[in-house]
Image 1 (cartoon, one colour):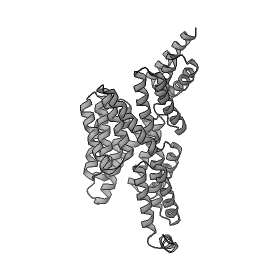
Image 2 (image 1 turned 90 degrees about the vertical axis):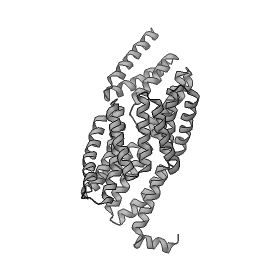
Image 3 (image 1 turned 180 degrees about the vertical axis):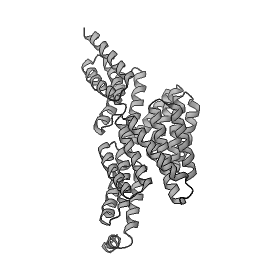
Image 4 (image 1 turned 120 degrees about the horizontal axis):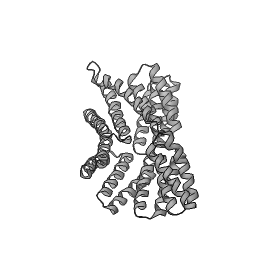
Length: 365
């Protein structure tokens, strides 16, 4: 691009098109797992939009940056950018933008173990977006924009309820999400929800149905080239094979998923895959291998500030430390796990931790 072309972009009618092109390229980079490169495009677009007084575009970019930072496990950056987006959308009276950004903020609280606040924020978003999506007076473009956000938030609500063990409520929201995604022809979103439905069937013990949904999702993901969700689905297929006792195929899927997640630097998803591989080796009583993967997952969670389920992972690691008589490491893991389990009110895990501490005390005597 020549200097003259750049001047036209900065000073003429092409400016907004250039901003949108940067956003679109950033979105593609994020969807294909290159979130750090996506942030670079978003930063460039934000600077131009800000200088031009395009507040609606600044808000959109701040929201998208929050998304990218979430996928990299950078939770403080997620919160900072999302908070600014919410304030701008609110000032502009953009209900769709505000509700969408609010769902990002809900994710921040979910990652920090505050599930009640997460669900409350998501429900608030759904109430606003559902009103807009079902109101016939709105134009098609407005309804589609509301539908994209609504379907994603239904999906998030399903995941939140699944975390809390309410599988029937989770399925209800996943099916609502799938219905809207098909109505608005959101292929990437459809694949993501098919993946989540498959996970739920797996938890209910219907492995064949689970794998069927996973395979439907994979076909879409291969077609659209979304590596991030592709790796997540591959991980879940591995879990399905585990339930069918095809352990070699299971490990093969986990390792391939981990390879992709490391390539695209998807830290959040990498944690779950590392835990699945750790569980595989733990069940095989190959404790050193199991700890290698558990410890890597714990390290990522410490580095990124993700606290969701960290107390459970620390407890699992402590169990192995006790088995191999590394009691000092076990004590350290249990001490941190206890504080986190009390904070998130996981009484079941707290009871397990206290029992493990008794076992350690007996070993030392």
